[in-house]
Length: 222
Image (cartoon, helix red, strand yellow):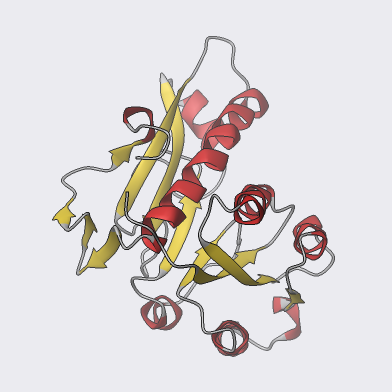
């Protein structure tokens, strides 16, 4: 495995920051070659900001309700991000639809995690929808962000079985446990230079992916 210099990371959140905590923990232990430059939330007072502060990371509140419209909020968000000169920006439960202008600005260095096996169940309430439609498996996906909602090229997925009698909360908990493994792995690949976006294709180790990587097929530090 190639060695990686630390990359600068900015994390965008809107809530409790569960995936953020997994990233903070691995960065602190040295497992993840990142310097988390800032955590920015569009909602003030959320738990994720407290997690950042406890981890010694700059926590920034940028309340979207204080802006006249989406473009003015995004202009301020871009300014808040770019002052930290990040190599990578990640969405970790950031609950704002982003415009094409924003996604183009960070194209190839903007990742998102989504709680479904994309392209299935884009949008909200994925666990309820998967159960209602009789799916036998569910999971989470990491993808490059483009202007299409939850539609950017998918990098890697983790799958979980849907059990008879499952409810959305139990299913969500199992998916979340996989998310905490999935996101740090994708960030590590990016830091190591193994992962990049080429047009509409994901390149992994220089080769285009015909299908998303599957977490269960990877060794712990693949």
